[in-house]
Image 1 (cartoon, rainbow, N blue to C red):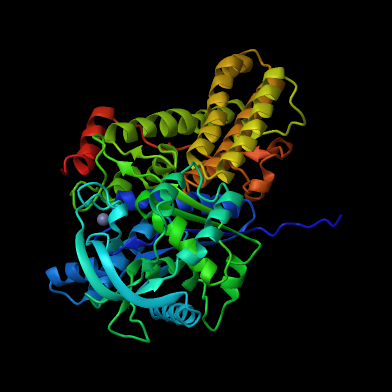
Image 2 (tube, rainbow, N blue to C red; image 1 turned 90 degrees about the horizontal axis):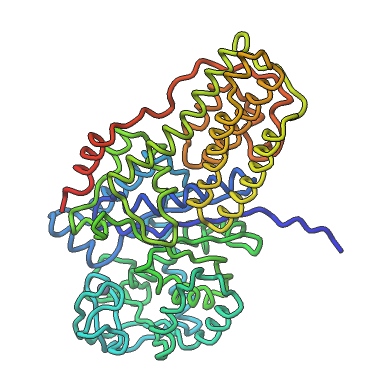
Length: 534
Ligand SMILES: [Zn+2]
């Protein structure tokens, strides 16, 4: 049997954010988690392409610009800049930022429309039905919730009739159901069931994909008083950004090719478009489908209210980063919430997580260990050792190997939160090990050989946990490794299971990685940023 190495190619996308208002912490949650996964995959040796961007067309944006009495292009330019600034402030490592008002995107949308029109997957007809203005979505009466409410956002819909173009969805519905059956993890955690029940089982209607009641969109070349429905326009960003149907399709061929693992994050309210219409578009274009559409939850306030601009309760990330640091916010957003679920963002939880995980556990372990090495060994130089002789040491080291394995499994299942728990388990065990081994007693009793070993187990625990935490702690993990004097060649994931203790080590002066927060004072301050704005 031929030994085929699977190519390590990974394409990850966030939803593109609707540029109708300024970004807030709810947007940061999905993008930070995507960034954690992208960084993890790069550490694992994947060639990664990480895409985010802004969805800039549609009636709502046109209206918001009109309200401010500003040119709509200028309006979306400003919004796109705010999103870009937030991602840069958060250390997001996206490889591209796609804007749907960009020429490169508009061209792809028009070419796709023409192709599908020519092959009769798009046809002109008359639309009669129900319309949700905030969602810019049409529905049949059967799809509405009781009281003519929108099935996506729950607001009231109104009846309309207009000439429009349609995407032939009926043609692909069996193929779609077949695909779901063969790929049960396409939309994980059973989040496809409701879509099938609400939209497919009653009979999937062809989708109305053009609008004539406003102009801010991609014009249909063949019929310019129509603009392409914002959702069809938006979905195509995932391939327009890779250069699909452009002069240079090399990125598209690599990252949308058969060897690529394609992982797409989408919020619950856009599940329908990503799990039903996106596959149908790809079928019509004769392209492969993503491996995973991952429906993420929402970040909510203490009272369970969703963060949103319209509710006026959405904190900006800027002041939080300024006060508590970039790493702390990234760690909180990755650790506190399981990516598929809804999670809380509350002041108390943030301050507690900061003090418990980052100050008491991780920061304290680093500080204590460095201080002990400096105290017990001349010039902070730890002599080499060749194997661990004590049973407790060996236990800690073998439990660490188990944690590394589990960490990778959790990240491979797209669960940064549980992966970070595995990393923190290593830290917890190391702190416990200090209490068990009482190095200060070993020093007093001049048991230097065992003392050396204990220090090495601690160094190794810090080295490994720092590497595992580094997707979140993008500055502090390396700061810890610098203080510890860990050479650069021992800071790669492929050294996780190598023992650093064969090397000589010289530690540097320690300084606190995270300042302890005064719980009452900081909870009050943070709450004034988050929860008071109702
Ligand atoms: Zn709606």
